[in-house]
Image 1 (cartoon, rainbow, N blue to C red):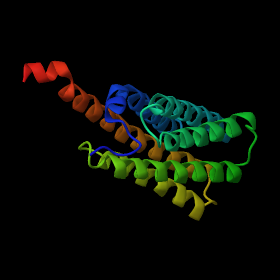
Image 2 (image 1 turned 60 degrees about the vertical axis):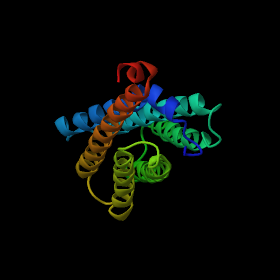
Image 3 (image 1 turned 120 degrees about the vertical axis):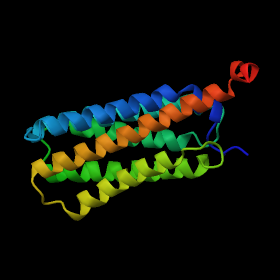
Image 4 (image 1 turned 90 degrees about the vertical axis):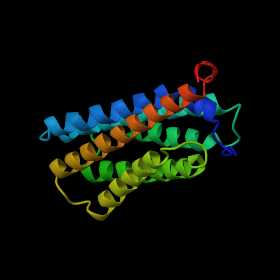
Length: 194
């Protein structure tokens, strides 16, 4: 039985999009760990670029699923939220720390909810959907932490966001590799070898 909005063949064929999203997250997380004293202006630009790239990749995935899924719009919506968050932070780089914090929190909460919804639909199709659930929980956790504790200094915020991006990236990389492996095991060539 297939999930109503996910075409497994399309998802496994485009595993590399998930991989790129994960690598972007890991790189963003590492950058914040090695430069924790980075100014808020640099954080704004880094986050804006990350959210924009992640959003564009999600939109690409959604567009590729458009013809084969009736709920491709959910991933499209997630991508548009990421693009909007990226544009807001890049267009207004002088945004205050508190405003940036709430933009990031809203983005993380929405992204997490969409990731968990996708994982629930994937659970009957592939093994390893729990990686997407964990990335969704990490996203929601970051959003909640940022909403509950808006007053910490920029350094703490940088480390929280960096830790989230790193964990999120690692989970997406693991999921992409599972998708790739699963796709290869289902390919016609793999069936002839077995």
